[in-house]
Image 1 (cartoon, rainbow, N blue to C red):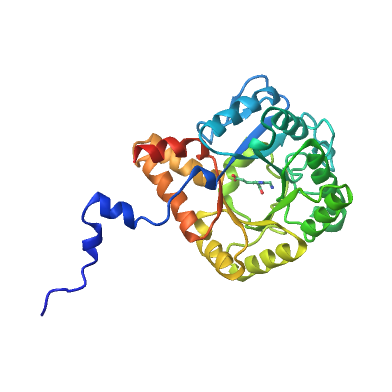
Image 2: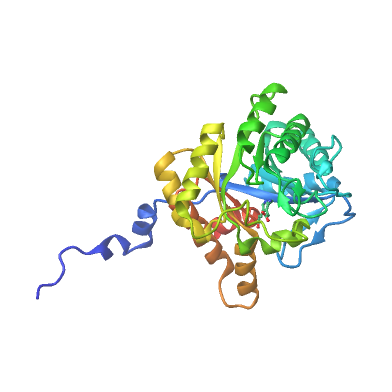
Length: 326
Ligand code: PBG
């Protein structure tokens, strides 16, 4: 028996060696900060299942986003909780809708220093909590497309840089691209939630956004987690329909999908480190079972290493400070 001549440990010996060999580095420029705007709120409302996350009143959104900018996070994704809901989610495309108001405020305050993204979906705006028009208990695909067009155009009119359709309606990217172009917004980009799985990790978000379906599930429009190839077909379709950025969601249980999508398409790729993934880390950290900072940085770096160019995460505002501490 001879001792090893190849010794992998040589390059791990000192912290300077480890420093030069560390090749995937997380940066605040990778991050998108999701922000909840609540038309009814008078003060920030804590979201119980997501410690340190809040629903903000419209007039406090700029202050919250300013804090993100100070942490070098220059992109936000806006979700709205409207005053009124109806069968078709019409407050999602109102000129003075909650997200439209927030966008105008942010654009006025920060101009092009900030990338404003808005979620294009109806589940927060419909009484039944599904992501589009419902008939006989089923989500109607083609009748929902026109509504999504109106939502996207109204967000572009308010000043959104990127609209992000998340309803998993077939043809949504094509329809939204056409509507934006027709309305003169050919410079507004689309980030498509292309491979969105029907996931139990969205639970805390539904509390945050008040978007739990009142009956049934989202399984007839979001994907089943046992099907990886379908995700690649969804992504390919969205790229062909004109998506500028494609997304995989959630992130942690889907790192294989992120990796395959990056290898196959080499298109700008986002991953959503969703609410449940955040809450798990927070809960364990509050119990003293894990080190929140270390675990969060490891998770986010892992998502980047898998192939994500952009990561939506509720940890966004903490990352710069944490990186300076390690
Ligand atoms: C809207 C939407 C959801 C999320 C983002 N956009 C919820 C859902 O599909 O039920 C989830 C985000 C998160 O869990 O952090 N359709």
